[in-house]
Length: 121
Image 1 (cartoon, helix red, strand yellow):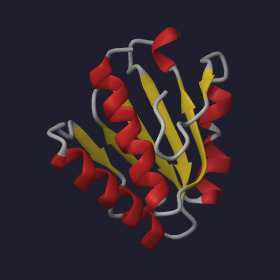
Image 2 (cartoon, rainbow, N blue to C red):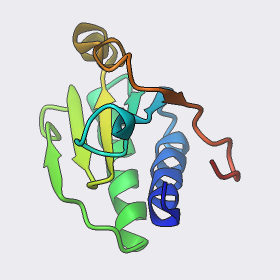
Image 3 (tube, rainbow, N blue to C red):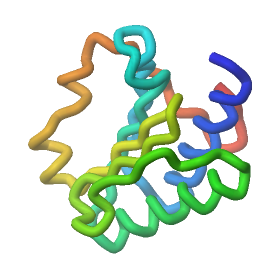
C-alpha cells in the first residue's frame, strides 16, 4: 500500500468513527480484484446517521485533497457508496447490510483491522 492510500484509508476510517459508524470492516480487496485496494464497510442506524457519516467522510477527504470519483445511494440512505479510487466506502443501514452481505461476498479478501484512533495501519 502506498503512503497516499494509507493516508486516505486512515482519513476515511477516522471520519466514519467520528460519526459513530458501527461494525467497521476493512477488506484488502486489491488482493482479489482490480476494483480498488480497499473496501471500508460500516453501518449507520438511520438515514440521518448515514448522511452524517458520509458527509463527514466527504468533507475530511476533500479537505485533504482527494477527489470523490463517484457517489451513489446518498438520497435513499440505505446503502451509500463513496468511490475514491483506491478506497471504496460502503455505508449501510443494518437491514441493507444484512441483505447484501458484502463481507460474505468478498470473504476471500483478507480483512484488515481498522486503525485505532490516532494510529496508522
